[in-house]
Image (cartoon, rainbow, N blue to C red; front, side):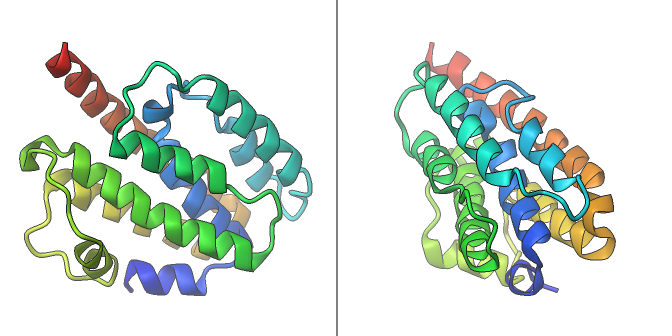
Amino acid sequence: MSLVELIAQADERGLAAGGLACLDRCVPLLGGDDEALRPLWASLAAGEDWDDWGERVAKVRGELAAGDGDFVEDEAVLLARRMLAALPEERSAGALREWADACSVAALRIHRLLDPADGGAEEGGASVSARREGRTEGMSPLVAAELRRQVTVLELLAAHGAGGVRQALHVSTEGRRVLRAVVSRRARGRA
């Protein structure tokens, strides 16, 4: 099943986890630490009772927005900031679906921009759409890995509900480490 189809079929928790995982992997661009989004992950893992989502979103957004001043303004950082700014405080399926879909596109674009194997060349929106629909030939390694992670997170939540949150967090943590290494190499290259 394609990423687009998985997003279309996901429930509120799956959508929240899908978008959150994309944002979590991009935290290194915001200057946040690895635990920055932990309160939101904990809220999703709380079974049916994740009523404190809105409060946690506001707190996380404030903390990450305050810590992002050390990074050069470039398109990848701007995309990550937009994901954070658009994080919905309401847990309606409509708002979460729109956010999860936008985060999916933004995360793939960020990985494309930062991919050292590709020289950081920008990929057009149509190509990102094609990737999300399942056309993966010629994809760079960093983008291919991000696409696999997005699919895996949505499949885990579809199969296990709240029980899949811990596994989804593990997938996201792995991706964050990879992106943190890429960002670090990029910073050393600029110095």
